[in-house]
Image 1 (cartoon, rainbow, N blue to C red):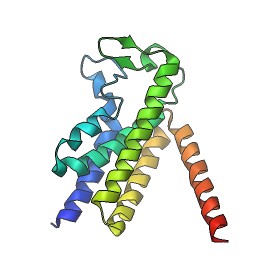
Image 2 (image 1 turned 90 degrees about the horizontal axis):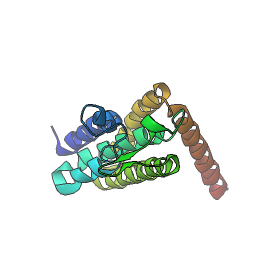
Image 3 (image 1 turned 90 degrees about the vertical axis):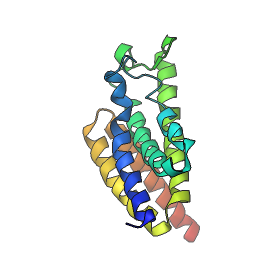
Image 4 (image 1 turned 45 degrees about the vertical axis):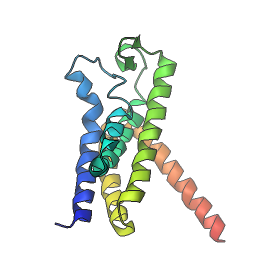
Length: 167
């Protein structure tokens, strides 16, 4: 199998892993919404070796979508707040900021890596696959609908701006 295809497959599988990776804190003694798993930290850890960069790209994108959905809980109290190791729970406001900033950072890192790792045609197919899987995830998860609405509004705005620049 060509290395470019392997890198694309690793990125996509890592994306699927990244969608649920933040909730590994439930299986350990970290407390739900641990800052260690609900952050860009797992994706950044994969940047340690160049050959892991496709996995970092996918985990970053998946984690970014997960954190974006977590930014819209029913109520940001207790179980929903972010927990820092050795410090405790952040306030509701700080939890919103933590989740939103880490979601944006993870998605930005994934986009940056995708541009560096994948040829344009491969990146386009990968983006389509990630978009379909991401919409499916956001469609059925709590907090996903507001993220879909924001993404649709951003896409509409981008297309409108692009059309106005052409005219």
